[in-house]
Length: 376
Ligand SMILES: Cc1ncc(COP(=O)(O)O)c(C=O)c1O
Image (cartoon, rainbow, N blue to C red):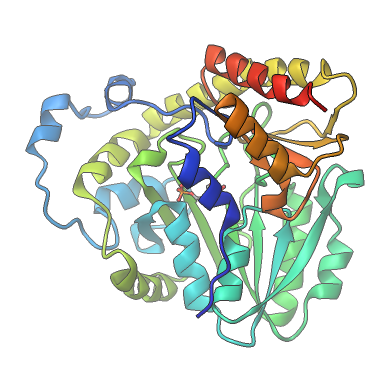
């Protein structure tokens, strides 16, 4: 197996803990354990002292029943047997593509996109067929192009909704056209919905859940919940047999989650506390997005963007004569600040700016980026 480098993740994992200002992150700023414990919710809350009593043995491999109960409550008519708890959304995507794809298969992948699944498809010996988002169309894809791309060899169609890096969402009619294309050839759909619930305004992004049977929805606590350090993700699938199969792959990849973080995840996903966490996320987005827009607009025509709808990310095109990786490297070295170059998504002359940090941190991070921009 040859797996291509995952440039975006390499950049972040190498530098995110070294820089003073990290604007490369796509989620809202993290909660501390104390803040999470103090968030109001129903039922018996987890207390600090309870954490001290948690046994550090192996957790239930497919996820604690109570955790799967709370996850299945997000997906109407599902039960705990439709859920597999994974080590972050990353493992959920890893297991799904690993289980579904074989050498010679084709997978249709939206581009630009979080590049994990592109790399994995290649790694499993399958072929990536890109389905492009069109900037001139507000970064929406064209369903006629999907119809053309789907063939008898199409095993899987991968959609990230809300999308990373554009921060845009796809509506129900687009989802229905993806289902129609998949149904025509019996393909599976992998819907990465990890930013769902992190909408700036308006209703929750429509889910693929309930629209199709050959469906894997992946998600987790890292983005909309501000809890990436818990490393809790999940796959939900209408087929309990498929969940069993994925679990047997999970036996090879990570066995199970951690009892400690599962307890915190159960606390976080208690339905009323979950709503409070999502409200916190939206309020960060609603405060910070106008600030970022104002900053971008002040850069005198340097940037163009389509206003993001979800996730703490803005995808901007810049009109400076410098490669995006070179620009991001300069920002890192000169200003001790991390931004995400468009190159990592296969799009030079674009940047992804994270606007999830705390107010003053974001202001200072942007001031540092500006100092570098002024040199061009
Ligand atoms: C679309 C998407 N899916 C999955 C992940 C990975 O999530 P996790 O940190 O839960 O593994 C990310 C992280 O940036 C992402 O953007």
